[in-house]
Structures are given as C-alpha cells and as structure tokens.
Length: 415
Image (cartoon, rainbow, N blue to C red; front, side, top):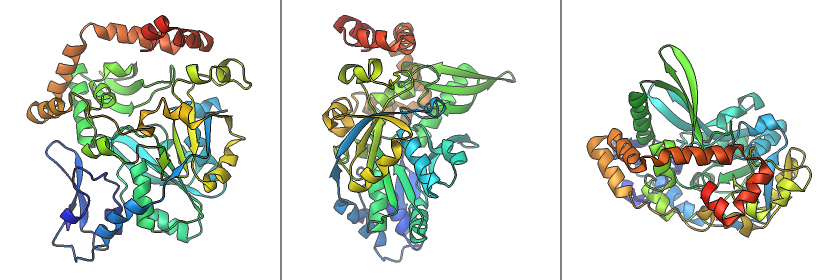
C-alpha cells in the first residue's frame, strides 16, 4: 500500500493518510538521516485504500490568487512581541476566538526527548501564545484534521493554520468545504527534521557547556528580522542569548536551502495560487516598496516591531479580513510588491549547493562535524555579521530607510 501513496521524495508529511486510516495502520518513522517519513503497518492494513484516495484528492483541491493584499501591523505592542512579524495570524486568531471559535496551529517546545513541534487545538485567548511565532521543523498533525472535522460538524467556527501542504492535506481529508472553516497558510521556505535540529541543540550544549531550556526561531526582542534566541542554564543560573542568524550553523544551513525535506525543492504550492483563505508572511523590503508607511502615513508602521504581508485569497477571506481592521494597521498593496521579495510565492526553494555534503557529513560523523565545518568556513566574518546585525537592529526607522535605499550603504549594512 505504501508504494501507492506519494513517494518518499514527494511526500510532504501532510498526514491526511494518517487521519483517514480507520485501522491505525499509518505511522511515522525516520529515514537514515532522521527525516520523518510515512510508513504502513501491513499487519494492520485491510486494503480499504482510504489513504490512497485521500492522498490523490490533494491534486484536486481548488487554488486561488489573492484578491486583496495588505502590509499590516498589530496595533498592540505587546501582541507584536509574541509574533515573528506583524502579528497578522495572532489578530485573526483573536477575532475567531472572540466569536466562540477554536484555532489549530503549531506548538513547539523542549521536552524530555528534545525539541518537538506538533499541531494543537486552542480554545481560549489565554492559550493563543502557544501557536505563535515560527518553528522551522515539521509540525506533526497527529489527529488534528479529525478533531477539526468534529468541531465543524458541531457547528464551531474553526481557524486552521499551517504550511500550504498541511492545508492541502486538511482539505483533501475533509473532502468538501465548510462555511465555518477558515484556513491560513504561511509563505513557507521549507521544513527540515526534528532529529536534525535536536542534534544541533546537543552540539550547541556540548560546545558551550550549557543546557538549553527554550529556543525561539524568530526573536524580535531587539528588532524584526531572522535573528533567534535561546535560554539556557549554566552552573545553576539561567541566561538568555540573542543571536544573529549567522551565529547558528542550523539557521545558516536552513536559510541557504541545505537541509530541507526533499519534497520542499519541488513544492507545487510555492506560487501565488494558494489553497487557503489567507496567506501570511513577512513584508520584506518595505523600506523600498513603501517607505511612506513608515515615515508619513498615520498611524505609522514600525520597522523594528515587524510587518506582515496578508494575501486575502477568497471571498470568505474577505469577510474575515474585516475583523482585522480594528486590530491592525492595514495598508493595501499589490501582490507583486509582496511576491517580488518573497521568492516562495514564485518558485520552490532551490536546493543548496552544500546540501548533499552537509547531509553526508551529518550521517557519517554527526552534527558536531557539520557545526565545526560551518564555523571554520565563517572564520573572522562572524564579527562582521554581529556588527551588521547591531546596525540593522538599532538604526532609527528613517535612518534605516535612507541606508537601505543608498546603494553603497545598503550593500554594507543589509546585503
């Protein structure tokens, strides 16, 4: 039966087959390098082919091109600090919860067996923080599609968020549209594997002599961008460290496309044609596209606090977008102004030139060897990375825009 599902190289781990199987025959395992994969327990399989049918149904899910696009920022400063960019998903989730609905999204934390990410159901605003910010490993859906279907049948309003392939899996599983279902996907670069990330954490702990207790993939405590932070314990005391992306071999290899799942490099969903009601991401390069939003329009948008882009892809999306107007600064923009600075709205992430070498080294010598090789390649440039990060983080908005739009200064500070 497994050979009739998506091949390993094309499987997105959407887990529609897992949620469909009535016998519990579908399960997760790992390949030789730790990447998660779908397997079938033939001793439990009864040959009903529900998994095969739901996998095939993904191809027929309707897609839409955005009818409205916005640059957006939550008005609440406190809310912005909890989100990776401008808080768009958080504000939509709040609106759904205020209507008595429920939200599904990715929760990640460090547990007894390392860092893990999974989808969970949220029923109150007090729990919403759990599914905010980015996690660059697969979020395991488990039974959340089935749970969402139960909520929909009970007449609940449901907001389901995830990667585009997870929304595709949800819709294939449901088999029809529900008026009470609102879907939101992200502009996704790709996902890696939990074992790979945990090997990185173990290497970090060994190198620094620490115990990592929390990891945040996108840190805005200083400024908006792709910085990260982690909390740790050492000698009985607790600390927090804020870092530029280049200080982590894992983050660097992620952003270079060296450690994604194989299916990410051929993703058909890396397009302006979306499967969700909403698409959320970062409004990168607002400095050049719309500096007036930062300097002249009132209320002003703050660069340091993060700016979201919102693609409203359906008529249903338009109805729910109205709920954001009282919670966010919304500035209408063109789809092109967003897609020109978000490559994954145009094409899948390119396979990094070092991918084969990184994975081969990881498989043969462990992540410590990958980490050492990265730091050897960076050398003295790390000091430069930290300096540029400090400049980007602390420049006032007007000065940042001037620097960004000056060819020489832009190359020195931002490129």
